[in-house]
Image (tube, rainbow, N blue to C red; front, side):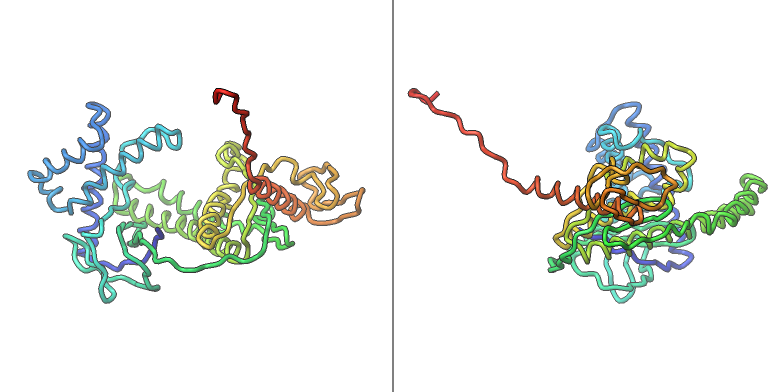
Length: 368
């Protein structure tokens, strides 16, 4: 499965209808959550309940049935993520915190630059690339003042081969990425570029009267400023992950515990700005599609160990060069760490590729 995302250009009437659909789904989500907390109804019981109450509710009747069923599916997934320890307990969604709804393949169709949405109409679509495969689901997404559609497509099998290279990736804050082949990318600090404007907009928002039209306008302007930062991060992560997956068949990353690292409030903002986790996830997905592989290794000692001779060379964090007195290697400390990460990744790949020895048992006279 792969997702294609396109920009939508709805008319004012269609935009209003989509806003109403989101609000109906949000209220239904909160009602289902309250029902689970009180009566402990299960997933299938709630789906049957939606079918029953839809007939007598004009708001629910104005939304395609599968869109409503998907709300129950989302709540069930939220509970599943909570029980396995991935997320906290599901919470009620206040207005503005529910931003999408989903059709199955019976609720939409694509034709001549438009997507036909059930009970909404033909919405103009900017189809900037060809969809290859069968679109099974379509999710309509509201992004501040813009609309998008994300098609989940059962992709046709295509031969995409990864390169023959092998690379280690060291993630950092001074250098956002250092590769074992010597390439170093400095941290562009996207948040710092927009921080002065974001602070100004936050002050302006705080002065506006709650519930007023001017406060809503200020809120939208602030959300747009944050959206610029988010899209810069996404653009970087997609382009670099594509390059890594295309050129290399094996990519080794540090297995950093990012969730624990952002507990340090002095570094949390900087760590979130470089989006290590997103880069790692996108690279793993794209490498797998090309037949490549991403390996996570233990980061312990990778900055202190000499990649030339293996000698430990202790150094403070502010020291940006690695100088080994044993073998004479002088190199950027992040590139040295990336080489050690690659060596650890190759060693782990070799160990995992070795066959597991089969222990044979002697069989006695009576088969025991």
